[in-house]
Image (tube, rainbow, N blue to C red; front, side, top):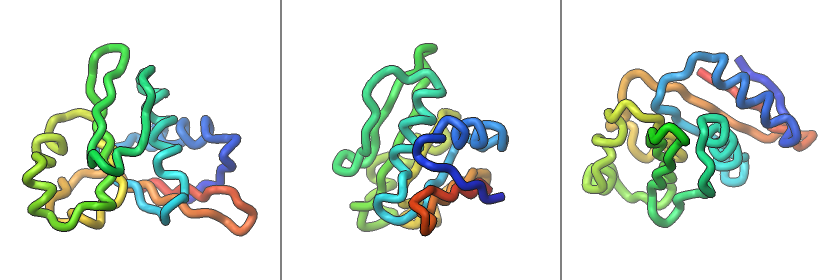
Length: 135
């Protein structure tokens, strides 16, 4: 189901996400600049992360801690060259940890993803709003 949100209504998008009963491994699709990282920052805030959240473009993965001490892993796989590289960084340990895993550019590792995932696709509409589809 696709919903349209402006950046000013991101709280509504976050509520819509959590009402969709998502799996803990979440794949984010969208063009560069579509708002994937912005949405992930809002999800982390909702989950109780108080630390600064940012795109792990160069580190590939950032770990955030919630107020309860749970880990959230945020991946940006844009710069990854192969699934072997992802395995070398131990991505399978993260994916099967039972913690939230937010993955930007998941198409870089299609054979490594678990069967049960939630996919979020963000696209910009002609009016500049973001269309959010959660599957």
